Structures are given as C-alpha cells and as structure tokens.
Image: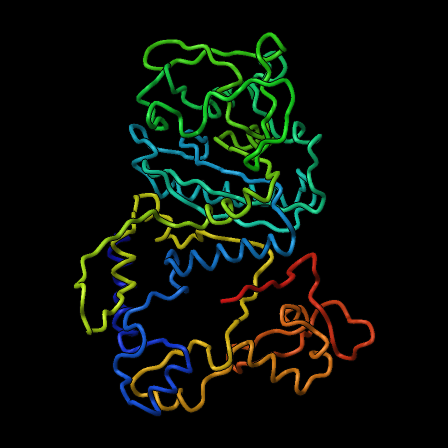
Length: 440
C-alpha cells in the first residue's frame, strides 16, 4: 500500500514540476538575453529536499548535524535504540507474532522513542541536555531502530565514563533483573570460531571487532571511541551461559555490547551507547545517522554525443529505495524519521548573481529580469536600512531577526531577551531555540 502511496506522491512531483527547472541566475540571465536557447536550461526532473527520504533531504539533515558540532562542539553520547518485539506493550492476539502486526510495533516504538528522548532531556539523567537529534532506520527483518546524538552542557570526562556506560555482565546476585536484560539483549553473537556463519563475519573476521580485548580499566581509543572496562573472571568479571544452536556456550565480558544500565533497565531493549571521545568520529556519526539507503547505480552512455542528458532524480530515488513492512506502516502513520532540537535556520551562500532560481517557461523572462531575493541578498538590504544589523555577522542574524518566506525579508524578533543598548531589539533564548545556519 505504501509503495502505491509513495508512487502517487512522486508522480505528483513529476507531473507538477515537469516544467519547473532550476539554474543559477547568471546562466539564466545570459541565456535569456543573448542566445535565447532556454529550453535546454536546468534539470527537467528534480526531487526537492522537502520530500522526506530524498537525497537532498538526507544531505540537509547531515549538514544540520555538522552545524551542531560547529556551534556546540562534539556530541557526548551516540545511542542506538532498537525495537524489542517482546515488549509487554505489544499486545497480540493468540497465534500472532510481531511480524503479523507491524502497526502495533510501529506505534509502540514511536511512544518508547518519545519517552526516551523526554527521559534524557526533561529528567536530565546524564546531565542537562544542550541539543539532540535522531534518525530512524529499519533492519532487514523490519524492526525499527533509532540513532540518537546527545550534546550535554557539562561534558562527560574520562573518569566518569564507567558511571554512564558499562560493557560488563552484571552481578546476578546484586541486580538479577539487569542481568537478565543484558544477557538477553546485549551479547554480540557469539561469532568467530563459535559461529563462523554469523551475519557479522566477513573474510573470517567479525566486522564489529568482537570478541573485544579484556582490560582492567577504561582507556582512550585511537578511533574516537574509548576501550571500555571489560574485566576477566580472574579480575572480578562475571561469566554467563547462553544457548545457541541447541548447545550451551559460556561467554564473558569480551562479547558484551556497551550499554547504559539505567536505559537498559528502564526500556528493556537493545540500547547500545557509545561515548564520543574524539573529533575523528564526529563526521562519521553525523553522516551515518542521516545516510539514507545504500545504493549503487551504473549506466552506459555514448562516448561522443552533443545531446543534453536529462537527470531524472525521481527515477534514481525509486531505483535505490528499500521499503520494509514496518517502514511502510511508519510512513503511512506519518511518524517522523528525523527530529532535532534546537531548530536550524538555513541561510543561502552564493556569489553575486549566483543564486539558484526556479522558473517555468511562462515565468522565465520575469525571473531573468527580477530574481527573487535570497537570505543573503536580503541581509545586504537589511544592512542598508538597519544600523544594528550592520554590527552583526551573517551567521548572527537569525538570533535577532526572523525570516519571512512570504515577504522574502528579515524582521526583528518580537519575543526573547532584550538586547542591552538597543531599542525594540530582542534575541532568541540560547538555551531553548538558538538558530543555526549552514551554506546551501
């Protein structure tokens, strides 16, 4: 059903934008004034960033994550929250499994995800949260999982990691409930010699680098992640027995996926939590949670040709998409696949007359003569009439002004903290919704 719904949406974009084209203004102006060859200008079929899941949409969110890093520094925690089909909240009829009711699974996971974000933000279980963002993906078997980035006001220091993250089997005599949760949800594999056919195995090696090395204390790693404390049985670590392929296997701390005892005990699911230690991991993390579907495309084209090759972004998107049953239900119910706080203001960056304009055959001459203003050109206009604006950098404008998309101009904010020495001028509260920007 969702494939049909999405096809209808894409068809609407195709048919209503079949005449809509985009080009840099200077190229459009030259073509309109000089040679008159305007039919070959621009891309005939584009998939805008407003379409959820499109490459432009995913790239936009990746850039937003990078701007958080520029404004607030590295994130503190990288959390992967996976749906647990055994949750008590997933109530099924006799004989049914979670595979039969993806609608219930999607609704429950959505509520659990909202609860976890509120749990960390409102109750400040890891400290006061400066900003956060998450992206929802789906496993091949259909279960959803969310990748979450958390920025804290007070950075977690190296000597506090063990208070937040654990990579050890809990003592069943101290906390039996947590021991059951960890042994059921947080043991990797086992793979390697114990299970050479494990999905994580490639060329005889585990792609997740398990089993990990047993160490007495947490130390800083070289790849941006620390090496968490994993004590051996001789050093006070615990072992447990699991059943795999009709046989019992004894595992120790080298197979435990890093977790938060508080989150695991609260939500009873697979919740992998990593401490972001180095800037080496930042770009990977920010791009990973907004990477979209994996796709490889190739085509055969003539070696010598004078014809213009039209790029069909809609067909390219459809060729690489993957729709699972749970994802289809998620999108039908109109649940978001990305959320973030605080919001990000997108400001245009371009050379003179280099802004991208959109036009049709009917509006081509009008756009060529009077291009619509952008946030950058509006900033220059604002500086000519507002003395306070001349004291600001371009990136600081959204803090004191709001962008009016209908009027195509900036207006002073009406709510916020008063600016000392300025009349009728306020700035947005930096702790709640400090606007950011990135070039586009």
